[in-house]
Length: 384
Image 1 (cartoon, rainbow, N blue to C red):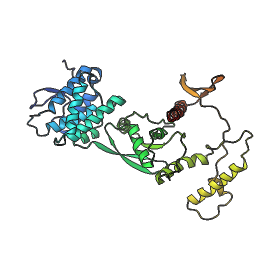
Image 2 (cartoon, rainbow, N blue to C red):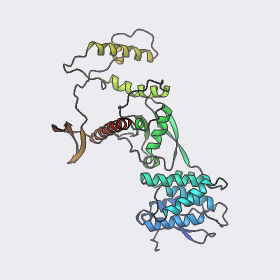
Image 3 (tube, rainbow, N blue to C red):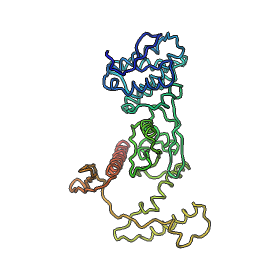
């Protein structure tokens, strides 16, 4: 195989084979350059045969390694764990690669069994999610080379609370959502679909939830590289299932949903007026009861003054428009975004076009609600 100018080919004296990107016993900067060059280079992503060759060489180096370098095999396993999170191999090689990783991971007598298990997990995640896209940072390569496979990433919850989740090379958004939902006591996979992970970047007016198969470290690495302040926030984006009551929900579940809903309620975004635009007495009583509870939740025991009671009551920006679940799609014309919504039933339909910079977000939420409704209908059919 011909190597283009600038490609890095390293030699392991003990193995006697050229291995693109192999981590050698050199200074730390060289380790990072080699790994980044192998992943960033166009060859491995473009040529399937080259990916197979890289995997074959690493399989050879992790089998009966006779290198005079004492940690040659260990470094090869760690390099393999990084590459497995980026790209797979051919169908012809896959059974042999999976057997190599499985046999090493299941044999606890081998010192490499833990890293082999990580390789196996990363490779399976790559087959399911497509593999990572962005080059790993210097810090990530250095940490993996030193045997540290997880990074402590902070995720924010509504209300300002924070939780730390160990984020690995192959961790995707769905993994984080599942782990945070477990902390809330939300175990149903269908109900977990209601939660999303947002990446809030300072200075951006609008934001989109991260895709379920998006790699966390792909997102954070690019933002850290550009120096943009950001944080990851976990919240409920769809309200299809009823709130938990029996058995009693976990305190964190109540805290998270309350802190998310309270600001929207006070902004008047959660109330729907009747057709005449006048709230019914039952609604007024509920608003008064909620205002009293909000006053007490703020650790205030005195009777609120009339002027200050507005802080516990919703604003008057209410919407009294309803429609069936629409199907929406986004169009772009001359740089402007339009959301086309088809409203109605099978017999009569009409299209409403709305110009908004949040067209993608609205369309995503509509699709998410439709998906949840379809899941519920499917579950009911299965029960019947």
